[in-house]
Image 1 (tube, rainbow, N blue to C red):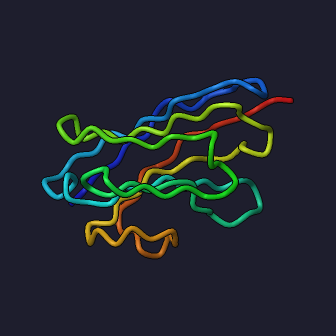
Image 2 (cartoon, rainbow, N blue to C red):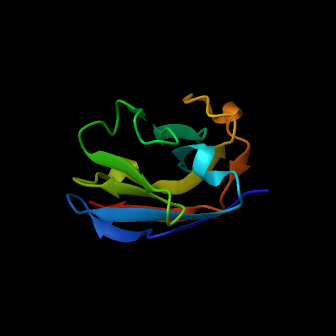
Length: 124
């Protein structure tokens, strides 16, 4: 089993920054691809970023490329999402997810463990 707990969300003005954290537990976490997704009200949950178990492969959605950085610390079992130059359209609940089969995909259907989410609100 894998448990994921997100933190770091909040209210920030446009142009500001936030760093989200995802603390993971479970013996398979270090070998998992980890992803961040987000869901705005009335919209589908969408891919934001993913990182392979070694950190050697990283993928970003076009909407956040150049503004977000995903990283992981396997010793701490924690994944981070640094978000800069935030825009009002980044407002959403952000979810951390784990793919224990290490597939490095952007579809949420490949991730088998999810956190509860953390709210990010960007004011204009």
